[in-house]
Image (cartoon, rainbow, N blue to C red):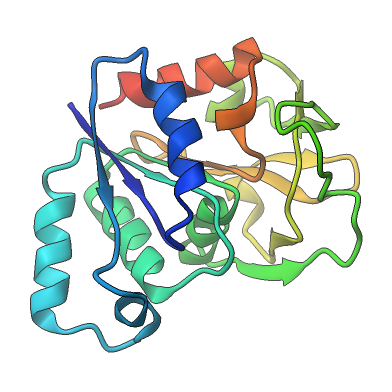
Length: 209
């Protein structure tokens, strides 16, 4: 099986932690990285570039959209392709925000610092209240799941049917589309966490490949 880690912002430390998390599984990892910064900042990708991207996506059994700084059309194209072709996709932080946008939501600024906590990346900071009717709940089997947090932005104006979890202050922390094989995004960074719920999440993703 092949799993792609799509690097939106060429921030390779995200890759290292995800590779480590996936190392126990029998999967081959490849990375989709834009040819240049201009390639994915430009909103007018050529047909040949998109054809090359689609050819690469067709090699993948699943996609991980990791965290980053800003969402670009390049990311939106990949998330939308996975959605339309029902390719399992796990979105992390900004990756979840991209997935939320293709589900009709928007991205807004939180405006407070309680969701961006520096320090030990594996430290669990606040709970996420999980929808008992969600696929995410079926995976982690907990009503509350404590997570790390380091984000300034969040998904807003999303149809409630796609919301799988929220923080106590009503920040959307997990999204999904239950009609897909695996279309789940989380606002935190599970690649840095050491809890059993994180293992269950990655297990569920891999099992859908």
